[in-house]
Length: 298
Image (cartoon, rainbow, N blue to C red; front, side, top):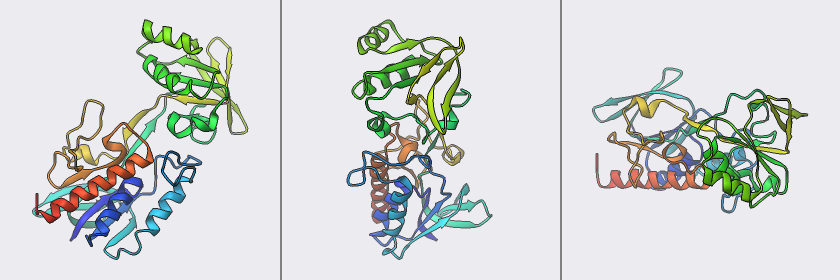
């Protein structure tokens, strides 16, 4: 029986495994190798690793676990968890069942894009992004279009106005901007379109503009869009974890969920979705698990 099985081997999961491995905890990482940022060219705002391709970061993380003989990594998708007398049965898609006293969920989230024809074609590498912190610098001084409801447009415009003076916004969905938000968008110099969006235009894999329902094209070199993060795995819900009003798994200061001996870390527990924060969240959860092992808490 393992001390801990970590479900998810991206930034948060590998970070937790490093903490636990350094205390000789017997750890199994089950990773289906489908990270949220697989289409991104580079990771940013990661101290000492700014601009590193995400796949390279994960490879470095796995390699740095090799000195810790009690940590194992397997390419496997966990499909179910079952409470047993002294821990969990953890079943993978191939029918294998592992047992562990504790489980850390680090399964992350996936981005649900608006149903706009062509948008997904340019997601990640073709100029369509969702996070100014991750991709804003790379499109500085370019023509930018923001797609989203009033709250999304206002929030993204406020951030991106520090990087470009040529910003347009196409409203999509509710709520509409408030009078105050409209006034501030005008002060920022944002051109606002409140017309149905027909499709996203582009060529050779690069976005070129937003085609409106009335035929107009709003030209751009980059699009920032409000996405709807969804849990990448149903395991937390199936285990009865408590969620907050935004849909994130509720954890305490050490990564404990509402289910005894079940922990969670990374993008699934916070709206602050950056790799460095996921790494920190994983380290906290790893420390929390180790603390509970030391103090024999259940």
